[in-house]
Length: 365
Image (tube, rainbow, N blue to C red):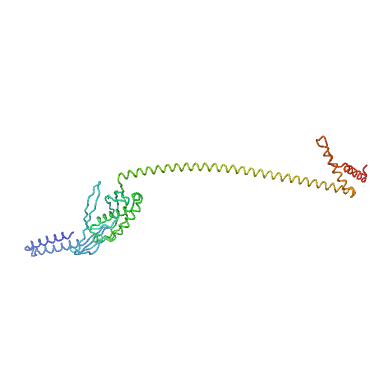
């Protein structure tokens, strides 16, 4: 119950006691009874008025004789009626309903400590490249010091709104149009830092600022649409060109790899042919060497037999004569009609004579 109601009740009780002052009931003065009842009722109402129940996440700022006394927190609190009074909170909020702005006045004796959202009406800003556009923002703030929020600033929501508008104009004025459209996170961060620092002395914590809508002029929107279309067409052409380029590169790489593989095959084939020819030459040479070795071994064995069968002084002549006769036999077996002897006849006769001497020596008739 308010202090005014308490005073009114006290006045009524005083008048009632005065009216019954001349009466008496059973020897007891009626005025006394009424006065006692009035005092009891006044004390009861006074005691009830001294109790304040504050809800969770709310506080009440108490003034004693017009001066700040304390801040009541959630729960049951006790004050002195008629002396302690709650500070009235009078805030004006701008509400945008269907494109029209209304001013809502809020009068209460409690301060809400929960995070609050404030939807600012759209305002005009000018970018660094002189483009005028409309920007709508949302502000999330929370009161951390109720006493500062009531005593340091007259109208907290209006002060926050005006500060946000001026700060937004400053921040957006430093950026070009394209930057404002793609740098919302940067703008939000700058706005939050500036507003949080400026509202700290008001007992307010700005948690975040969100740009809800950025609306450039219609001619700028048309130009941006044309630019976007041209950019998409350019990217499409680039992608097609990149695809053709990649395809040509792959075809050229395929042809080059094919030629390399073919040349590698020819190289391996040549190496194998050369290796086979070399192996053939080696085998032929080894066969000839083996044949010569076997022939030499046979001739050595024959010479050994001749040496053991004939005297030592006629053995060389015998061998030479045998060679002459073998050579004459090979020449006579040729396909030619004429045979030339490029040697002296006396040498042949000498060889024949040598053979005769050997046969005589060996006793062969």
